Structures are given as C-alpha cells and as structure tokens.
Length: 337
Image 1 (cartoon, helix red, strand yellow):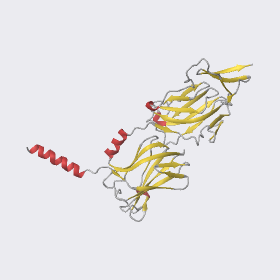
Image 2 (tube, rainbow, N blue to C red):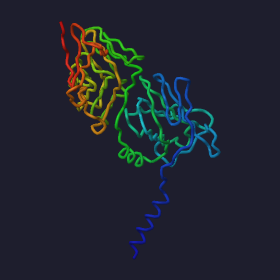
Image 3 (cartoon, rainbow, N blue to C red):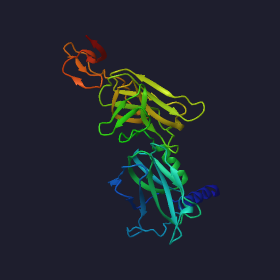
C-alpha cells in the first residue's frame, strides 16, 4: 500500500505547485490617431505604428510600477484574426524608472494566432507593460485575450490554434517599377512591358511556413494575360511563377519549400494592362476554393453573350478590333473587323 500513497502524494504536490495560465486584465492605448481600437480589433492605419498594453491593478486602475509575473514564463496574445505583420516588445521597470535593457522584442510569424514572447527570468517580477508595433504594411488584428502562461502551455496553444489565412493589405501595393497602383480603385496599371507590382516583405517577416499557397482575386475578369511571381531568399531559391490568360478571376499559386524565407509576391503583365484587385492572401489548402477562371455559370441555350473591353469594362455591344466575349461560361478574346 505504500507505493499508491507515494503516487497520490506526488500528484497532490504537483497540482498545488503548478500555476495555470492566467488571463491578464488591462487596456490597449494607441500611440496616436494612426492606430485605432474598435472593440477587440486593433487597426494599424500606417506602417510602424502601435499600441501599448497597460496592466490593471486589483482595483482596475492602470499600474506602471511593475506587475509580478514570476510564476510564468511568457506573455501571450490569443488572436481570432491576424492580417497584419507586427512585433511585440516587453518593457520593465525597477519600480520607479523604466529599464530598457531588460526588455525583449519578437517579430510575430505572419498569420500566427498565438503570439508569445518570453519573460526575462531575472526581472519578470517587474513587468511595466508591452507594446505591439506594425511593420511595413498597415492591417488589423483581432485579440481574444491576453495571457500569462508557462512555456509548455504556450506550445500546447500553438498546436491547437492553427493559422488559416493571412490577408495582404490593398491600401499599399508598392513593390516594383514600371507599373503604378491606385489604392482608391485598387488598380495595378502596367506601364512597361511585363513590369510588375506587388508586396515586398521586411526581412523580419518572411516566414510563411504556416501556409500552402498564395491567392489573388480580381474584382473583374482580367482583360489580358498576366503572371504571378513569388520570390524567395537563398542562393538556390527559385522564383515560383503562375501564368494566367484573359478572363481570370482567381489565381492560386503553391508555395515552394523555401516558404520560410519568402521575399516578395507580385503580378506582371503586358504594357497597358490593368488588374483590379479584390483580395490577396496566403492560405492553407483547406481554406481555398480552387477557382481560376470565370466559368462557373451553367451553360444555357439562351445565355446572352457579354462583351468587355481589354481594360475590363463591360460593353453594350461588340466593337471593332480586339475585345473579350463571354458566353456559357467560356471567355475568349475576339478580333472583329
């Protein structure tokens, strides 16, 4: 009977000595008007802007004298959605003065729904606050809760909370020359033949290993052919490309094995081409509906032919020269004399 008693005693000791994760009370305070808080949503309106999370004391008031997290290893944000590249940094105090050298900073992997940062083991009794700062592109994150937890609890949350998609902003599409982008109309205009326009990622935010593909959607059928390009870092890394024909509505491009060092994504086209964007995102296989062309309409004997100019404008009737015709789900370029 001695052995069961020892096991029971050990189990009781373990339960009493373990500290379960704790939800942290506090508030996010924006740095300025370029960062807005809407409920649980934090909208970063410009790049490199942010919010600071201030801890509450037991009376629900902001306390900056140093909160004691000595029972825990990490501070963690559980997110419902993350469509912004950002980093998190902890700040400490000796009780009266902020000690910058004690703090640490971490760039969060794009799309990760569990954003954690290690606490300084020597100074985690005196955590002043932490802040979130957006990267090169604006965006939004939705926060579920702020948690203090152990390393093991953090790793378990990572296994349970899987990323599904990461939306790229259409407010800023600035990579590439020989092409323009109008954020008001979300239109890429190609000036030089097969020039490109897209998104270039800061070297702290190039790990897209959570995802399987890049997806781009057009607000209207493309009037011309084009190409999606994905470039990676590394001497032997190869650019992934996917060509498409006129009439495309969505292009899905699989990511290569080098997706943990993805440098940029872009769209190319012939001189004079325009592409009106509806959305662009990184996605998992289970999140995407594989649509590549506007051909989902059921064929019908009396379906009328629809006509489009090469820049995607719908026409009342066909015009002389080259234009696009669509009927019974089939899209093609036609030249009329």
